[in-house]
Each structure stands twice: as C-alpha cells, then as structure tokens.
Image 1 (cartoon, rainbow, N blue to C red):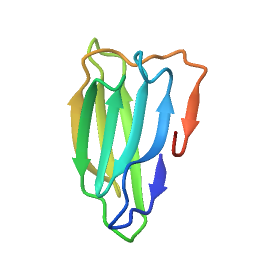
Image 2: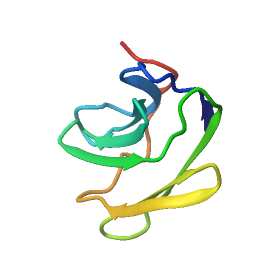
Image 3: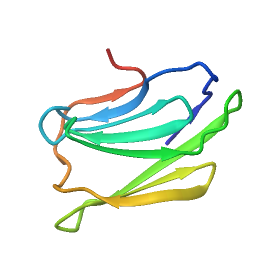
Length: 102
C-alpha cells in the first residue's frame, strides 16, 4: 500500500481514505509508531510496530465478502494483526484520498 517514515516526534498523519469518512468510509493513518484504521470515525483499530527514523512498508487487506469484513495490516511484510469490522466498507465510492487529509 505504501511507505512511511515516522519520526520519533511525529503525530497523526493520514495515508489513505476511501468514501465518506462519516458514513461507512475507511481511513488509514499513522500516529507515532502506530498504524491505525478507522471506519466512519466510530470504530478504531490500532497496530503498533513502526520503526522510527526508518522507512516502513504498510499493507492493508480487507475481505469485504463476509457479513462482517476482516481487515489485516502488515508492517514490513509481517502480519501485525487482523480484526473484524462491525459493518461492510462502502464499495462504490467515487472519493479516494491519498496522503494527509485535513
């Protein structure tokens, strides 16, 4: 999905958003050494494991075919966690943002 270079004093930074963030949309970002994912800003999942002052590769997979989607996050090729989301993610969105979103 992408590369990030977190600094030891870095704060919240966006990576990717899909759809309407307040209605079944998805937002992925980093905060310090942690990758986070939120669905419509009501459900948050956190995965620590980023290395400061180095390039880190982040990949996210979402199995949206199940009644409750499963999201998996990889940091530098290693699976750091999988979680079940409460509702499906919006599929037919015309809005996709890459990078920090303000």
